[in-house]
Length: 519
Image 1 (cartoon, rainbow, N blue to C red):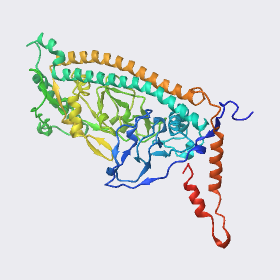
Image 2 (image 1 turned 90 degrees about the vertical axis):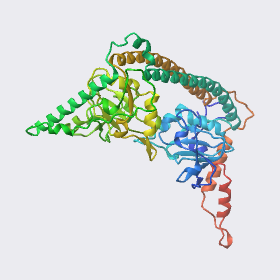
Image 3 (image 1 turned 135 degrees about the vertical axis):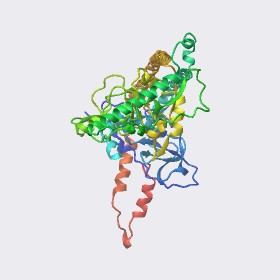
């Protein structure tokens, strides 16, 4: 029984390397260039869509050149499924393999093939390491059934039509997500300006400690904690304490500038992160290590999610117990990421609210410890994602080599509103209730989005087994152009033959190669 026995009529079994050949066109940086530049960040994972592009004139190194209809395949981290087919000419990152449009293969069909789950799984299995990537030698052996050229176009037309319907639904989902985020930010703004607890506050006028009095109490507790820590250090070294002169070493946090700030209710105060924490903030430890034991468990950067710590995002490092204790994650720690490739994810923070597993935090995270007064850490976590805080972070952020960063000094200076403790607790409680609603709605939106992604893959599965469109017996079988391609490649691979007079046919062979559809 032949290998094509179970294929639809006119189809042929082949491999990616047999039908495509990557472009080797390169373009040098040019300050006068008007070409758009597509980087890896320009394509969202699994989307087939090109988002924001840059100007090639702003680039510093050579790039790949693509033409309208070429297919771009992101070879780094193939599990991200970054595939696009631009309708314009431009330059792209060297992390893309450029597959030129050819006469024997509809480039839309190729893009859908590379987008399919079977190919993504195949490519992912061929890569490894911290920055996994593949080349054509890795993905070239991928086997797939090739339809006749005309049927490829009919398949691509049908997939275009069906995906267009799905995309309309996805656009509606995106609008819903934006509305949900807008609602979330509106609630956070009400929280940091006191609007969320206005009714609560009106009922308790004059009955509770003011924010100013609370801040005075916090700063007193901060100093006392510092003095206790200093005493413990000196006694551990056997020093005799003859007077209180050593207490003058304590540095009071600077008072914040309160001009041009959001209006907060009477009885609230303004503070900084430095004022509300113990002054012993620290960067973590480098976590180069292994994905499996043995070793000390160390969190990765992506363990710090918005308002939570993902303890499964970890590595194992070799570290002596004494040093590990210095970086151990403890209840009450407020962990803030200090570096990220995306400005939007910079300075994400999470409070360690319950007993964590034994682990250390990485050097891309700064640990702050709120003063040990009930509810202060919960308040920091609750308002940290607010636009008021985000705007401060983004003004402070600096970029180097494509990485956004903030420092300890930057974060210490973040301004934060401080309500009375009872109102703080009431605000956090109301925020949690709103957040539960937001999370439930977001989970529903994600489920619908996942259904759309699954439907896309079901459509592609039907397409690649010949069940999406009917076959046409008048189509030229796929074996014909495939045999022609094989013959052209064999001819191109032959060494030049010398003719009479010492001449060779090399110029003619080079000319023939330049006309190959795969070049």
